[in-house]
Image 1 (cartoon, rainbow, N blue to C red):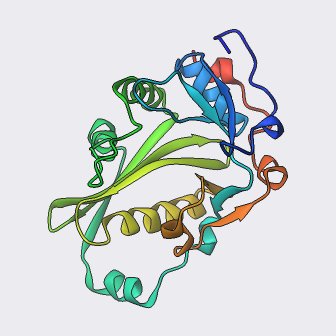
Image 2 (cartoon, helix red, strand yellow; image 1 turned 45 degrees about the vertical axis):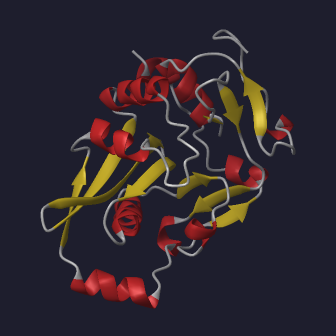
Length: 218
């Protein structure tokens, strides 16, 4: 696809590789906003064309279904931490983009960083950071459109840092009447915290219905 093309219906995504829908195009704000509003997100490596995905089934977390294990409940009670919203978006995305310990690298390329930084400056992309004893412990970033938050990535540099971030994000989403947190693809780690798989048909019910992309991207 190129910048003028419409995305295919998400029901046309491949089953193998699971969720692949289209390739090409660009990461400008209008393209990204349109993609997310249709349940589509980019995910690709440095040497690849831009790949667009919409897995079926979809992993989501209903904010009021966040599951706290016994050990995490104990950590919540004994840990003094502070929460910061949109304090330093570039720092969060840079933390998320660090090379993984298994040596497989990261999908958050420099091009991706610049694209999401623009969305943040437009008030579409947001981040949350957790500090413990004045030191950065973890964080998360994603896209907010109407009543859905599309989680992109999270990181942890102290024990439970990302769990605190996800817990606080869910609390924030509940207070602001968000209905669903999109986790994109299946993860055993997210499943332990309450995330679940739903059909793409059910997921579509939560997508923005009256979004004025042109207004957002002005």
